[in-house]
Length: 423
Ligand code: AMP
Ligand code: GLY
Image (cartoon, rainbow, N blue to C red):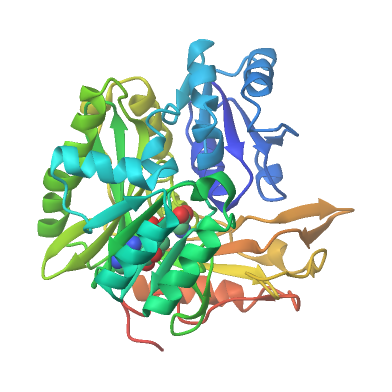
């Protein structure tokens, strides 16, 4: 098969790495890709938000199957356009992608199907939102309704912070994404992410993970897209997993189908766990980044069989084969990230690292120039280890980190701290 992956981050490199190992894969193209995907696939310079251009490219290159990595093309209807053109595609319709693209929509679905989540209220009027915050008090969570690249959520410990958040959102800091605001009850607990494939009817969990959102050791400093992750998430016990599937995931999938907008793709459920129960924090409609890197490291070649069965409505006929293993990834970022960061610094030592089913460096913001690997983004490398224990996976990942010669980069030294005693 000729397979096209849309996206250019660490998530897409890990997807490409897994797909490439599957014997069904003949030709593999990643658009736009990065220096890492260029080592195992063709890279194509394509605007992945331009649905017509993506369809034309897929037709011209006799692509049999498309995997959409990020949320923006999904929300823009790229999967709809590909499916309408008769090209098999993994990823939800724009209508189903609203589970990520609108926080108010997700709350509406939770109400309709009874899924446990934080109490909330919705506002399009700033004065009413301000009055609500003053009545409810802090801690409280203020969210721009739409896609805001992970920056539209203010977890406010004081009323002042919440009001400042409302000023930003209603002041236009997030553009149209802030036309509506969702204000939520602050939930305490431990967060974990659950990834579920759905073909619109059936569901198949494909792993759990925990990430580290803050830039600094000990979960300090500003929020980022994620500085590391590990899988499985020990906090997600079998009992909590089945509660989350029965009370949250299955009712959501059924409600989406009932509305005539079935969800086909990977549903990423962000969960808050407390006292042995999970509540929904949010949905994403794609694999997480860097969570995909640890999931793909554990799934390997079978990932494509599962993704294909999902897109073809055959999920009930397949199952995921799990080894009793663990994976951990450490994100290396450019100095300054998540603020303005240095671009163009050279990374050395990657070619000398082991590359096998227990060791892999997935690239994110990298490019190749005259044989050298150059950092071009904020999050740049995902140094990933797999092992029989989480401690072994972590040791493998950090042993690789220590051999990478990149003075312009940094990473957290404590990925996995919740699940492991620190060395
Ligand atoms: P979201 O984009 O909705 O996942 O929010 C980003 C992060 O904000 C989450 O991963 C949580 O850490 C935090 N968060 C969001 N909603 C809540 C809530 N209701 N209570 C506590 N923390 C929350
Ligand atoms: N790592 C968080 C996300 O992909 O949304």
